[in-house]
Image (cartoon, rainbow, N blue to C red; front, side, top):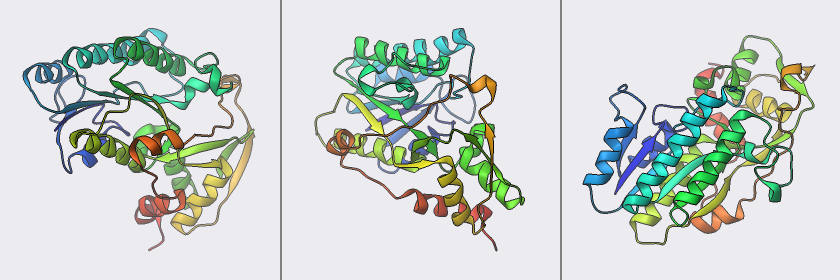
Length: 289
């Protein structure tokens, strides 16, 4: 089966690419030529020319939650997603779209989309709406919670776990904002395993499950996560609390909690605890030798 993965050179997209390559033919897509990957137009042309089981995993997007340029977000997060939905609908190909817990904001889940706090979250919700309208029976929307894991350093200053490990190794405390919400954390390897399970079931003739699925893991405060990171690398935890910056007031998502039941029914997958995932990832990089 052919699996087309957009955003294949990004933090999240590259790991499903690697996992899907174990059993499927994978075409990684990035806008423009780089890393030896295909362009969007080449991938769309391949959809037109090939037959047999195919699936598109759409991770390509601006992923910074503090991005503010609404026009750029609309072009890359909304219009590009709608284009992929149209191509998949035209060729009868299932689409798996990576959305975000940001679509809930701090409102109740039943009011999803109405309490988005950032332009980024608004763009993800707009993409969800467009995809459901264009490809209603062939799209699975994965709402990802706080994603961490290998390659996280690509997120720069938003790479909380990786930067926490760096900070502790340098003998400094990790900054934690007040309030310190209890968020849902999911490893990028769990995201990749979910994608592989979806593809495996489709290849083996099981019905594709369209709809919205929350991809989460364990709930922890940022203080908790610093403790888990410290344990993973053999250091003592140290934090310094600071008030939320003025620029983040009204844009900071508080507690999140995923419902794993729909995803478990769809693909039957759980995954490793955060403690285990952090040790496997950060231990070899930052652990004492």
